[in-house]
Length: 279
Image (tube, rainbow, N blue to C red; front, side, top):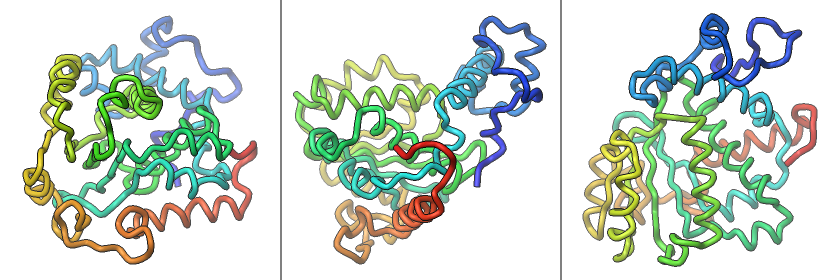
């Protein structure tokens, strides 16, 4: 199930994980980075030394938070939490990358908490989603995806200080730190009229590589742009494509990539999964 990239041992399993990467001798750092993906070098603008430190810190983070066994851990609330988060996998781009649709306007923090899901558990949900992407959907070390960021339902107050957007920002920071250079394209659609003002402030803070991959679309331009990247039969009709997935959830939960994910989690739940409590 898991890609070799997620092996957290450092060739000496009877010893604890080493101290902070910045404090390690170069020879030890080299030893720990025998499996470092080239994405980390790209993320650090070609600085191999910084990339090694970042990779070792990612290994530490994965070990400390049990990320390596996350997909094997029972998750009985998966379907309900995913429905309330509003994100789905749907088809593939013309280049063969899977498509991930994120709809922050559908993220219902209040209802999620009422269902007994803590902030930590919700964060783990997003990490579970990410692990599934890169361990099951496409486990190549340098794999990337196309993200459609649908801002429908987002108000300026949400962007500036809303609980949903605050959570999304915190999770995004975590994913950027430990899953770098995973985007082929980011297409932002259903952009509110005030978004350009926010974008002017945020844009200078982003890496040039991210800016080049991000496409801000308004109105009819959204469908045109999306169809240049995604074939009509792989794109929901709501976004200008021809796909109309069967079932009550349609394209937002009914695509085979989504139902396969649900089946994957259901099988883990049935087996009892890895040792440890469910989240």
